[in-house]
Length: 171
Image (cartoon, rainbow, N blue to C red; front, top):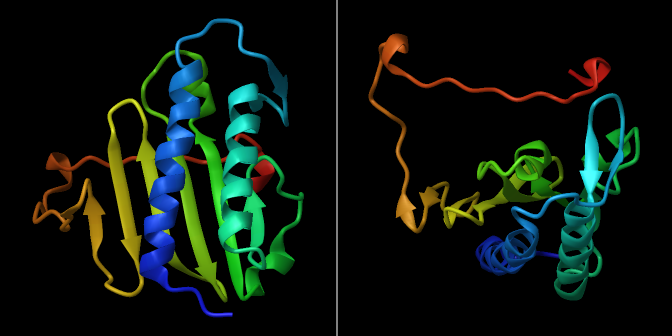
């Protein structure tokens, strides 16, 4: 099976926009149904509903692609790294922010071919920001505009950020 990366990117953008509607429907609501995962990590009904939606979208278009989502991932997914095509998603990337009414959360998706990311799409529903890239062009976009690496060479004038799993063993 061969997937056209530009077509996949367009399809994943559509899926992200639709998934963002689910986020917006619940954003700001108090007392969201949630459950603990590991340690201090948790998931909400929004994670679950968005995950099910994205899985359905991808299965309809790419039925033979292997799915790896944050909500359905096994503890050890190392065997999936050699999959021909692997769809990876975090349906509500930033659940903690979302649950506390902070706008920094996203729908994050990637398509991986034999261990190499060929498409990625990140959509922030509240701001409407969409970040995309693909291996066919090698160009990254923010809202359809080409992104470039900053020419800033002074670390003091830079912004550096990181994120890591809640589970200390996985860090």
